[in-house]
Amino acid sequence: MGGALSGTGPLIRLILRPDRLWLPLWPVLVAAFVSGPVATIGALLPTAESRRAYAEDAAANPAVLLMQGPAYDLSVGGLAAQQRAAATTVFAALAAVLLLIRHTRAEEHAGRGELIGAAPVGRHAPLTAALTVVGAAGALQGALITAALAGAGMPLDGSAAWGMIATGAAWVAAAIAAVAAQLTRTARAAATAALGLFFAMYLVRGVSDLAGPGLSWLGWTVPNGWLLRARPFGDERWWVFAPVLALCAALVAAAYALAARRDLGAGVATERPGPARAPRRLRSPLALAWRRERGAVAGWLAAAAAFGLAMGLGGQSARPVHAMPCRC
Image (cartoon, rainbow, N blue to C red; front, side, top):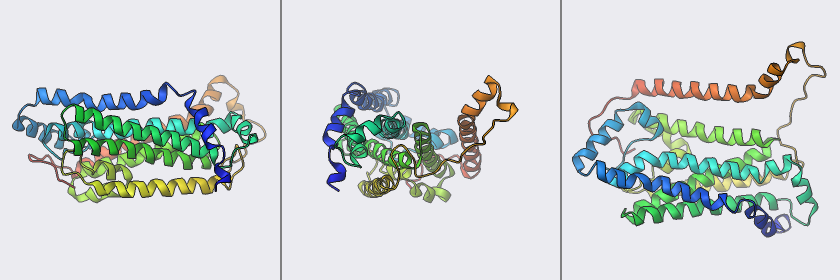
């Protein structure tokens, strides 16, 4: 394995050079997004009664439960986590996937991967370098979130739990992207597959929170549910991060195994060749645009349909409550 990883250090420096501005900016922006509502909630909801009323209203709103989840504590930190912990995982995953794909599949698709492969580097060095950089950026993001929340006067345990949620989301998304980069041939397909899977799991977690105790078990089937059930500022569950790390390790191992089976620039999944001649209906600029973008259009329509279906099915079993949500 050592020979397969030779040259990882220079490749890490090669990644850091063009992204020297974006890599530190991503964690800083997410940390600022997380710490923003702390002062606002403290000013707008100064009493326990006002915070309880807010939590009850949130628990009775299907859209809030689907997108944000319930509040696990009535403190300022607990309500801040209810508002933005789920969104934190989305931002962390989005940046992690785009960076990982940019420095793996996009490099191969542009032909630069072949130039790098001609140098004295190991087979798995590019993937290892990308995972190292993205993983370190995710860890930095978690540390900044912890520091920002603790600096705002929040308890250190809850602050650290929220930071670990952000780091875990970035690592899971990067591991998924690493597998997708081996399966597909283009950067666009890899990013679409990785982000599509992550958001599908996010939707599963939302349905479990929306549907109430009857489907609370559904949230435990996806890493998004594990992360949010760490419950920052609400009797933290530290053990949920163990399966997150195990999943990341399994996905990274799968990515290395798939990388060893494919050719440079190709994907494990073979592409079906098209017909030798195009039909007449494709001989116009509009038809060409439709041909190129039909996958994206279908994806957006499917996502909208899935969102509406989740709201409808989950809303049928959801009931307005007038107490704290279930601590699932």
